[in-house]
Length: 189
Image 1 (spheres, one colour):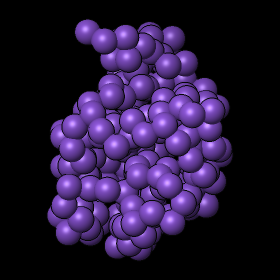
Image 2 (image 1 turned 120 degrees about the vertical axis):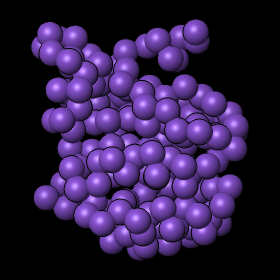
Image 3 (image 1 turned 90 degrees about the vertical axis):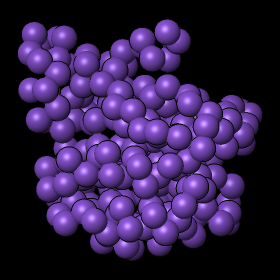
Image 4 (image 1 turned 30 degrees about the vertical axis):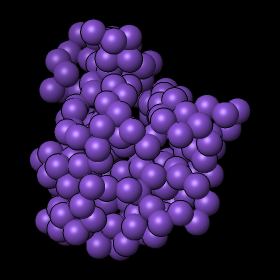
């Protein structure tokens, strides 16, 4: 198993379950937000601050968010398939970008908490992803774009957010990603 899969991020659901002596399922019930993190091959681009990969910068910002909101953030990584990540850091799958499958997988939280998608906005099938977003009946889906300024992915993520009453923000090459997500969390309360 890779180190990324085994790492437990402070403040993650697994960390909080271990600290409280409770079950992961009980901890999950206290989530305010589920974050879908793109771990596809395009997230390897090194255009994040300091020449870092988008994936690495996104995981660092996600760790900051979990530390500031312990036990409140559920994480699902997605590429060719979605994966629940109770330890708080999604494995870097480096495959395609099946956003529709990730949205379908996360639909179990519809009405229970907010949903945010972090991506460079290049799904395998835009129409399928938009249909999956529209299938949510209660939870809004907001998006955070982490790709190059003005890229086509930015426009797609804005359309995805509009398809489900959400908001769309840009985290300039993953800078201040945690702050952007916290703003999205607070704006709908």
